[in-house]
Image 1: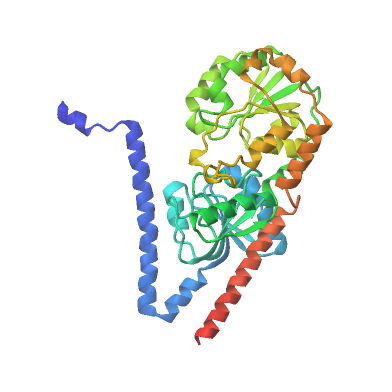
Image 2 (image 1 turned 45 degrees about the horizontal axis):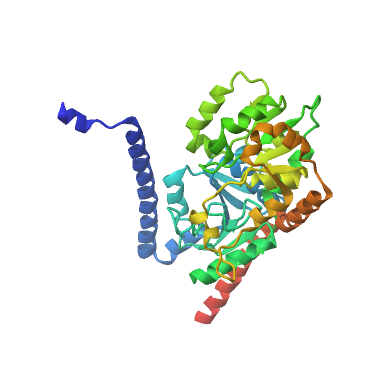
Length: 428
């Protein structure tokens, strides 16, 4: 019996081990392929080198998941318009790219997790563009056959709200607004790392959402709607307050849309299931898990959130008031925790100081009287002006981000090619 117990593997552990095995097998496959190419190069000399060079891509874009389609679509559209081939690698098997009808976008599903990283780690390309942070920090390593790695910002908030060292080892970062440059430069200096090329291109996904939102017809028989849009984790309002906030909100009789953060379905599934079960008989609550948030945003008359950057999506796209519950967010795991002011105190980042200007704080002790609080939370010229100023800072080059990003990749490839030719001539 004791021997049998030692042989037993619970389903969770078995699933994890199977995932590790598959990842390791994929890694070994791509490493073996790379070794084979090196052996070819060793024995076949120039011809093998030319074969490897022939498989090189000029422009590669990597999409790690379905939520990033709106980020990359404007860039792909720009390449298509220019009739310029681009390789698009995706870890989302049902990526809309496969139904988009592109002629110049060559799309390929490369799997998820370790399988995808194994492929990415052995890329051969001039310029690789991605939103995925952690290059040369986590599993994703720089390929020595990639000349330039570019990180595309997929949010209009601070560029320091990544997990520590998230963008340190990219060659360039494409920003949504100029204000994001200062803190990146501070961290580069303090950490003694190479300066990245910082280029403000605008916000691709906000451009795409703006275009889509303009096509949505107005809601008939509209009922006053409150949109609860939390972030995730122990400091987020849904996990922190739950029923304390939902009970009085539903008691108002207004329509309430709850749109949990996508990560909540993975990391807080038990909490979501409990709340959905509790309110399954309530007729004025709607749980929204749509891929695009614009349908919920457009229907809402006011948003309640915490430290989620969706506040800025709503503010910039809808120009309506927002309420926020001040959360004690632990910044120690983020780059922002290492940015300090001249007097040595930790700097308060843009998205939090700006939130205080554009939003109306909702305190826990006000939950019980939330109907009156919301009714009295009227808009004002001061709030409207603050929203306009924040939008101008964080969402520059509106409608141009896809074109600017594609052109950056093309120009960078040309620049690298020219530099390579000059070095070759010098060597001769």
